[in-house]
Length: 72
Length: 399
Image (cartoon, rainbow over all chains, first blue to last red; front, side, top):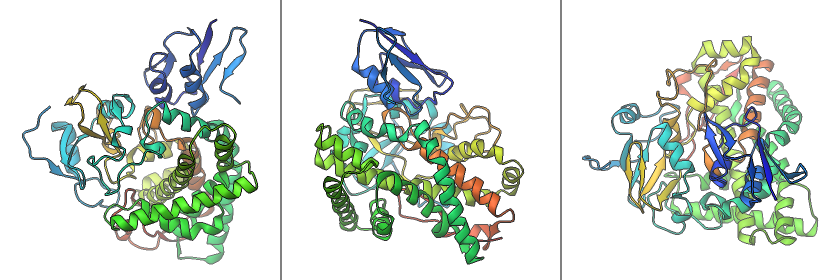
């Protein structure tokens, strides 16, 4: 199973939340976050990062493109 | 980096209004990792430059949890408690943070904007009815964020006098004794436990109600964590914004061209708020101390395992390597990645709420009173001392 991480770099404010919660999955490039790799094995830390982002700039999708996080 | 100096006594004097001690500008260039002797617990590194400050705030090798119940270098006599989200590392920090993160997203905060504007309108109606001179701190800067956070959390405004007094006590540094500070914290915890108990009798949809359900239905936090979290959100939810509203207004009165620019173009307010967040100092203590879990090489030098470090946000925000003309208040600054709300897992959960409230407050105030001015000379505005946050004691205005 593979999840997909989408980061909206225009709404990202560079809080460093995702890069601190899931340092292997997210990196700050020019003060904005991006996914290290868009396709990842299931990993709760990625969900935590999406749930904790103050801008809801991170979306995690499952196999069928369904949104796994954040909960709206 | 080992230093040849004796540790410098910290803080470098009581806060002087909105000014920083001039020593900082020199140290940022010549000694960006300063050995300081803290009021309690011994010596720490004070890190002053932007990149290193960001690293200390976000790198998991610098721990807040390692300060719990430990006699670490610090500003206040009381020790960190393991029930406070402010003293947790992931994954415990993440477990608690996730419970309230939803309530403070940018989207949810925008939903609160119209209500916040209404609160500002009502308060300014009362100011206008009272007539000049009026103290903006008591009549506007304080009640605005208090009303917002009380409604969001579910704390009765009627109890304001009590929790304000206790909150002042919790944020004291030198203005109270250790016993008085602990008594204030205990009063707040008892008060919050009462609000929690009420929710068990009559569930609510506010943030406190959400936390009570997270405990009772899903066991996602302990009772002590729940009560402490409520207290933290209540204090952090109003002391910061209330003081910054006062500080921003005081800063604008000191700089008539900036005040005129905002009056001429209210569309400039969001950028002005960001720039004032960068440059107008709130904290007076260098920030929460962290402990290095292993040796870490910062740009300014080596921090050894077990050493205490403070990341100084106010100085990072004045680092000329990141901000052109850093001491200049520039509402047209293009790149403004200030660290006023911190960085990493402890990035202020209320950042978006604070931004919105500050924007609403400044916009509403300038619109209502186009001729607003101080009723005392600007250099006679008195600022609080002996507290972790700084702000005007009173802001007498006329119009």
